[in-house]
Image 1 (cartoon, one colour):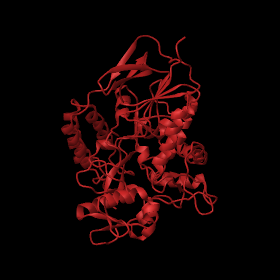
Image 2 (image 1 turned 60 degrees about the vertical axis):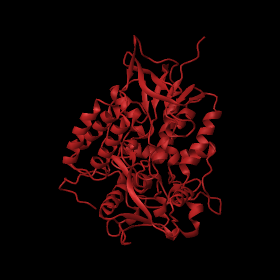
Image 3 (image 1 turned 90 degrees about the vertical axis):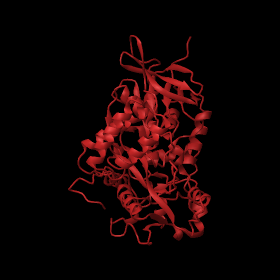
Image 4 (image 1 turned 45 degrees about the horizontal axis):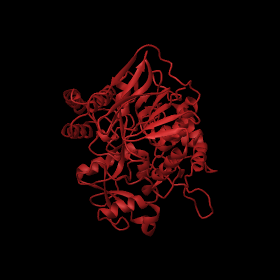
Length: 483
């Protein structure tokens, strides 16, 4: 008797692993490009996880801040589901072995980040929250008997039967190709930061899963909304930039220009803790005017203990953040848009599901609230896993199998050209003329590689939205002005 078909999960970040663990006892096959947490943007998350679990807080207050940050473009039902499930998500993570930071009395420590009206960010290892969470989830997945993990595979196609997705096509490092069949396919492949010249993401966060789903006919949603983190460390010539967590500003760090003047004073009521889209545009302007810096000297001697990841990154580059300001620049950080899904992660294609940053159920609106990303991965990943474990052992498709492959990738030089183009046209500040020119460039490159075809979809979506909204800021919109 043959073994039952597994649930195939593409991607080993927090959303994919949460879904895999929650699907027990159904068999799960997790496919990743790299081993362990390597290449997963989740492991790079610094701030922590937003959760309204302090006695003076509430899910409703968290939901309000989420919608304000998202310019009320959010799906309110999804927001309520996210914020109302945060407490359970934190408890589940602790059961998986995540040791969140605690105060002297043994209670959870809460940090504050941009867009939040109070401190509600739980964290682990100071600014190493993503790494600590992923360490625990990878360990849990390795010890789970229902999960099989295979690394070193590029998922570049889908297997369809009668319009039903029932597997994936993979290419190994040695060029060997194979088709793997499953009862369902989950895309948990992360974001698109790798399509931009400056990103806080791993370089291979290139939208591969999104491109594959779109090529197969899945619907997209809100592709124009790309969040830029305002405080990536400015390192010349580097693509994936070190992130300077927003929690630094929550702890007293301040943004300043080349003359030491405050960048955010008078710009927004929350000043340095304004929503990320507002701060990113201001930092971008300062960079063009001579530079932007983050002055974190107020953190003082506690810096190495409170923010070890940032401290190490600074010291490796000859900057002692206890005394010297850190040069910063905006960097592509998070995609609010993605494959259109419902609350259960279902796409328009039967058998195909998506979760995490590659998916869009409307929870983030036009601009994600800080530290809602790891929370989203846990809440909706677990929800999807619980749903999939009840699926029948084989897909529901009938008829002949059809293999749908993604186009080849761009060459290195073409990829560099595309990244520069996207950073310029699809950055924190956009214009109709710039987007039109970018669309023509993407058209010229699209035949050469799938990344350009995907970039074209993003640019086209941005062109269709003529007015500014959240992270999508149009300089040619007469109703708005630069902050």
